[in-house]
Image (cartoon, rainbow, N blue to C red; front, top):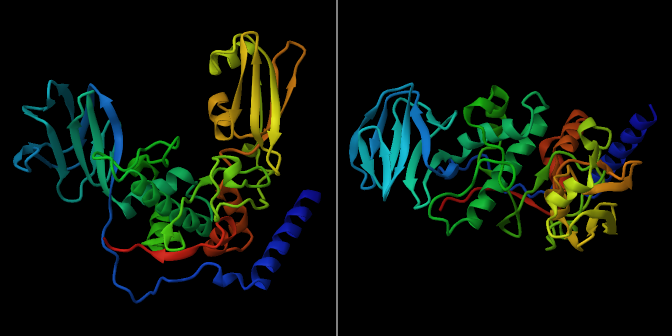
Length: 385
């Protein structure tokens, strides 16, 4: 009961703060409902990279084209075919070429590896194997991403906030990859977003994407790095304390997710396990927290072994040690193992997905949620290019 009262106080204070500061103009609504539909944006998503063989196909009859765009023939729908790396190209069924396009008819899906996707497939030789890239419309890509990143059972306002954040993130990363001749994004959460194909789509993800179609977050007319994470454990972080470079819109805010089960974790690591994760220091004797962020996340961590020591900084603390977050304490148990007790899940920057869930349940809409986690941003329609 005490925790619920504390949460209600925080939410009430947040509401007063937002409206007393004329918050509704913090997100500038440049989006006019009378504007024509935005030009289609096609994303190139790498599904399989530099492998010897890939299973491909389509749910309907698919047209197969070569590197010059000439139609070679068709693949029968609902069958799996092996695309195989060969010297200088790719072998697919009875054809050989430097690359192949697989284009389903009648709005069918394509099959890559073990999943179904919208759009079409490019299979290309890279010299180190073959790579399969899903070319898909941005909005249709988001049908999957929203359901992969957030449970489709959640409140529609949280899902709409996720749709805008994910759309913005995809276009930011696409710009970063503009010199990549093959793809714009991958399909994993390590560096990209969760993209499972049609299996994570649902009527609620369609609605969240369609209701926010073409909308992105910008700061001073530039698409932002709209980072998001599962939960912060009670407070998000300033970006410079995690990734090093300050950004004016990724500022730390008090959060509401510290009582979520996934935000509370414990991990026990043996000396041998840490040595394997941090090579070069020998047998690990100590794990020492050297500096913390203002919100008690670990900024620098020293690993001390019998052959030397190594300092981990910022995000590498979490990724190298394979931890849920960087907000933790370290102790030793009676067996000399390192016991880490922590809060949060993810890098702690930008929007907390569980925080968005709680705010939505308490009556905040998607614009209020986004305006809380991303400071000074504008909601802007995608510009046709």
